[in-house]
Length: 79
Image (cartoon, rainbow, N blue to C red; front, top):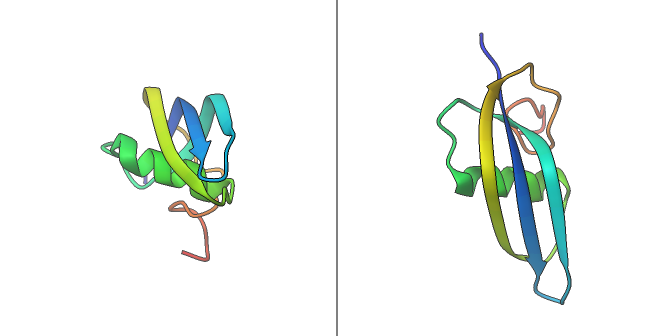
């Protein structure tokens, strides 16, 4: 079975102020057609970011790569 991951840049703003930026972050995907919204959800979940208000992902590339165990992703045994 082929595994997919997203490689992307992201910006997060928090409801209590502040923000976070990431470059070339990777998350496991359930398939090659994941939406930017799903990728953003997986990003926030993988980092356990509380109080995230907005998440923007861009420069998304979907690659074939073995899953690495993204928390909240398709390889997470808790899901």
